[in-house]
Length: 339
Image 1 (cartoon, rainbow, N blue to C red):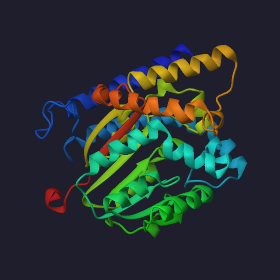
Image 2 (image 1 turned 30 degrees about the horizontal axis):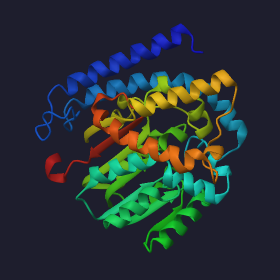
Image 3 (image 1 turned 90 degrees about the horizontal axis):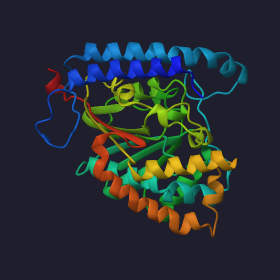
Image 4 (image 1 turned 120 degrees about the vertical axis):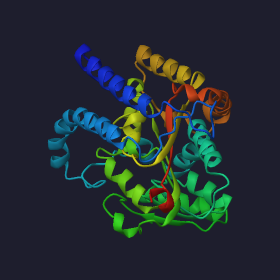
């Protein structure tokens, strides 16, 4: 249970960041005047975003300091200057991992949203932290030439099998993107997607910087992360999350880009998640997705399909930004725009 002082500190920081963002985004985008989009022109008032970044950096410093000795002592090599947390679900057999990654209702819904955001784009695409290839396959099916990378060989093997069954030509690479960033040339991709990755990385900002670099001028970057630190539960712990994000966390790293964001998963999925975690706490049971996704389980055959449909209903309220998953789209300025 968080102490009152810590909670107050987080709330004050969030209010300060939101006040700045409200001033930056006081004018709605002409392209979508009534949709509640938050659109940050580039590069005006980037100094204010840097203020937000400095405030957030100070808040992170306490957490990083507490973890530094543990990380150094572990001897584990992960993303550059940090350690990536492995999902416990990846310890299960490959059939179960593939079923979960490809059929999970929340992940599938967010993938659907990403593809709608990208249309009618085509060209070269990079999937950073591709997992079992869910997004990479969808991108290739739409016509993109896709490069995909991950730090887990096991999920890359699954992804290669999925692509082969779908008869798709996708380049999958075992790569620590932050540490091996020079492997990918600057200004080389029309689209970069990073779905549900940053929460697993202690020092995640170098990943965003690398994605900014490899994106072509005029290209589109899409990042999705768990939303709202107040919603952190045992499910996040099991998934290997260091954190959940606020919109300003991501926007502060994208100054100079035109940005738009929303969150999905409210009210139904958020209510279901609250009820599930409350039940675990009251009964003393452990969160066990491998049980939910095993063959013959009611959730695998019926429950996941019902939740997927509820996700679609929740999408109607995405602009309220009360959902479980934050989706950020950013456009890199064209060279002509910069001039």
